[in-house]
Image 1 (cartoon, rainbow, N blue to C red):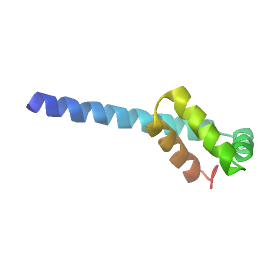
Image 2 (spheres, helix red, strand yellow):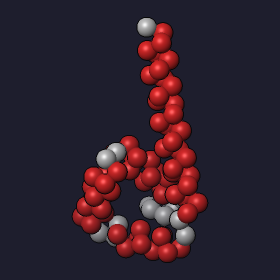
Image 3 (tube, helix red, strand yellow):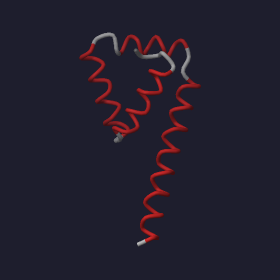
Image 4 (cartoon, rainbow, N blue to C red):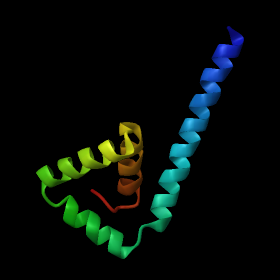
Length: 79
């Protein structure tokens, strides 16, 4: 039972670390051009929802998309 619990929390920790690392990398890689593209894609709510759904389908992870959106909001790329 202890082995299962450690495996569960260890896997969760690695998953969260990977998401955090990816979010940090996206924030560092994002420049002015990326900011302009993000603004254009999210200027209309319907287009923003469709882009979000498409990215979720491509990455197959809604958690990843949520982490990316929070990271972009923290860097003021999205409001």
